Image 1 (spheres, rainbow, N blue to C red):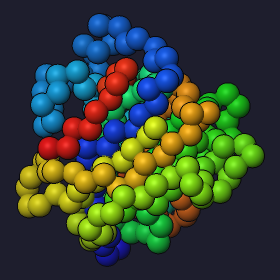
Image 2: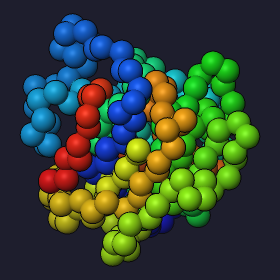
Image 3: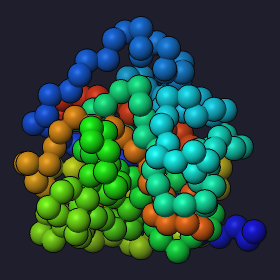
Image 4: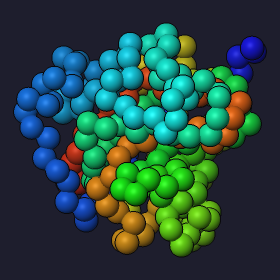
Length: 228
């Protein structure tokens, strides 16, 4: 299978400051967070051990696997996988993503719900690295219109790793670099949308192979981008 359309989101902060965030216990932080990360924030919590999908729940069995240090989309069907150890309202979320094969941008989901479970978790969808989006909430299921605002930015190539109120910032990684200076690409504003919910990864349709690595999050009252 040819490798193409490779990119990664880094320094993405998805925010909902009006939402109360459940506290994370010291023991939970200690068990989940490695000693160091490339972003210089000691409060970031690791979401992926690089070897298993422990801490993640799939919509369908076999959609995702842990492969070569990534959460690997198997391309079998449309669906999602969400982090089940913690749900957040106001937060910072940083991750790297690349698309190996596919005809739709990789997608992540925020402010969704697992009770009940509906398509795409009834969430707000962000599409790195160039700012695509969708609103899956009941009564919406549309592009969101004026709720989303795209920021001017150079188009990021889908053929390399790139790194990725709610806001998304992205940048391409160069060579062996693990961090880069990100640019704001998308803002979503809807005071009725922010709620405590799972952080989730979505594959839009069958045949797409997306990979994620270096997934970190932090529940915070007033999140700011980590852009380097």
